[in-house]
Length: 429
Image 1 (tube, rainbow, N blue to C red):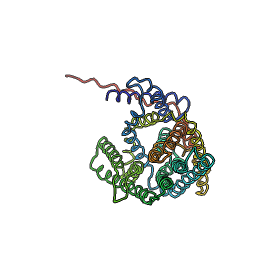
Image 2 (cartoon, one colour; image 1 turned 60 degrees about the vertical axis):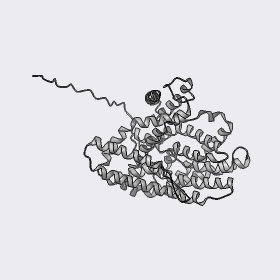
Image 3 (tube, rainbow, N blue to C red; image 1 turned 45 degrees about the vertical axis):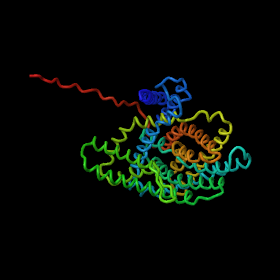
Image 4 (cartoon, rainbow, N blue to C red; image 1 turned 120 degrees about the horizontal axis):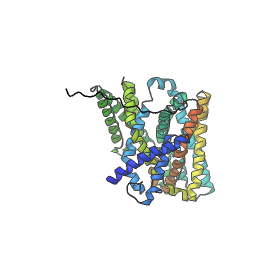
């Protein structure tokens, strides 16, 4: 326990210290935290074997999964608060069109190139693995995107549309992966599972939306019982923890496997709560300040989870380069074409695709599910390689796009320090 606490403290301090260096390079703080995680991971400082100084194994990092899942829940809850009814009325139709089109285009393009690679070199990648990687390519990481938006206080048409599209992307990606994984499994086993391909993914989305809405409404009802800011904030934290915990439950209804999407549950909780509660904005700001250290830990641990051993396998590198190139083109041109169709502004049309490149936890979760395939190890390694690239490069590209779109104000040198006020002497007479 002592070594774990020391390690977590070193992780937070290391991430913050690294952010001082990346600030000089005009890079987002998210990049600093990820690089700090790599440095403290089992392939760098962790390899020295000194307890408390770095993570000594991937198993030790994975043992902190409860922290990363909790942090992801708070990030999704915070993202849900962006979906106010007036924004949904103004941009909801465009976001749905763009969210669906860019995900489908990305999947089709990655599938086409990887299937072509399979036809040229059948021993390099199997057809089921190619189909599954195409669906995984549709996923976009909401955490890195939201952190960049929060850090630079970005605001404008591109930022608002981006947050909506990223949220929709999660649901679309889940459906695409379920269909692709079902087809891939059928190719290997020779049997088609209709429940797994159609019913279960749709049911997961419906259950997640229903659970998130119920928790959001319940939070609003209970919140009215308290007037203290600190108690209301504590209550909000407890409900997010409840949402994260319940989203991990799995059960069966006859032959149907039922589960929830953590991101969708927490996102819908935040969306419903912020649209029914009149004082939600002030409360959300307090929760976001409370979760800052947790978010730092999330990205440092995510950096430590990146397996550098995938860089020594030439097959992984070959498939990974094709995957990254085709996914990047799919995201950019899918967003560009759907933005033009939706008649978005030139700035949004030009820059939205770049902001959709980050990829992390959702993709890794899909790769874990695909591990049962005969080529599952290759799928996992390719996704790990892409996450390594996208997580280190993606936040900086997102910042650049928001800056070029004019939605990030130039930073000045600021300090949050406030000098202590002298206290009045207490008289004893």
